[in-house]
Length: 164
Ligand SMILES: [Zn+2]
Image (cartoon, rainbow, N blue to C red):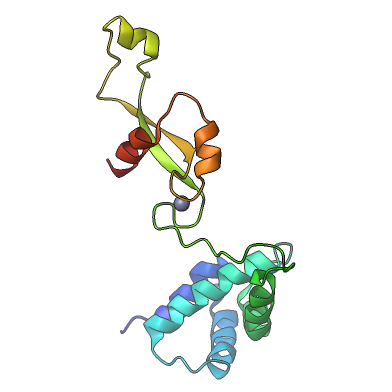
């Protein structure tokens, strides 16, 4: 039997059991298909995941069920787009498209654990280079101001660690 990607996506995105929730899933999926022009099952599955994510953003307090997603299918998109629009005009219209952090303004850097401190370095003591721990740091590309406030780390090092 061919996989029904849209069905699977809807079940996964809403946390619905395939068997117990089959009736609801099928009904909701039928309704969703009536509201979209996407016919390809795989693409529709992708769209369902995207729309479910939007649903959680615009209606965080409402339970996400297949029926609810189908019911609010269009509204979710409208609300999401409305929310994304800048509220005030003096807010810089600069959607973060930073490739380094993906717009998060924070990156994960891998640091040696335990860290080699300045003192250790001066005394020729090296910390372990085989174990690492991950830490968040402001993005050195788009969040440089915050980045520069953090002491003890220079941009080149973070860049190197991030790429490693
Ligand atoms: Zn960035």
